[in-house]
Length: 254
Ligand SMILES: [Zn+2]
Image (cartoon, rainbow, N blue to C red; front, side, top):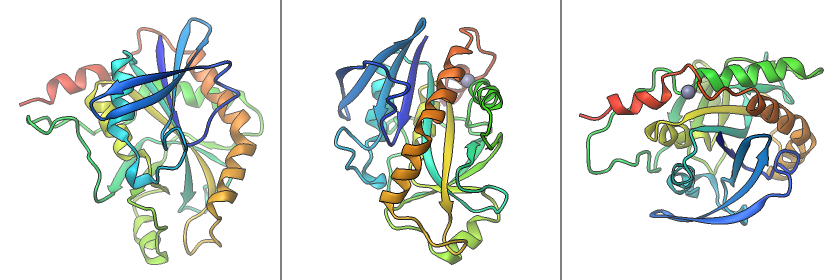
């Protein structure tokens, strides 16, 4: 299978001896790193761009997902860092998302500007890929993970206010700036998409916030275990996944 991986940081433990390729899309050129894992081909995109300098509101989400689509990728694992809004979810924990709330403001959310496509979002994250991530987490000792989680996507680049977190925490568990519209665009392309999030800190008002540099350090420390979880999940994938993701988009066009 061809598997896509999106992350804000490189994943050297997962991507062994990758080949760097350039994929032209109508949204711009995307750098993709390609390697293999058993019989699978892995396609890795650093979502913030090659220089890792694009802030969340300027990420080329459509370009990234289009590059996967052009490479005939059917399943995508997305890795992100988040702040927790719940005391039961602590820094260092992992969360497998099952739903999201979108509070972004200025992002292109669709590939379909010229026709009416209303893709179903009842279950935005693929049940098969989520199950694969869950089973992988269960195999690794000393990993605290949550098999469900609601992601609140903010526009950024500013962090949230304490009042916003109080409001958001009524309906969501973790907060971040990148998962939307990634998941929406993947769904429009009929891809299976799942997200594994690393909790780096508690959200505003629940602790002193970490700097971006400190968050990168937390991620770097956890990168080997995250890579291992994603690797185990990919190795467990079955070509004949039992999910509705590929067919959902065909029912979405008026
Ligand atoms: Zn699926």
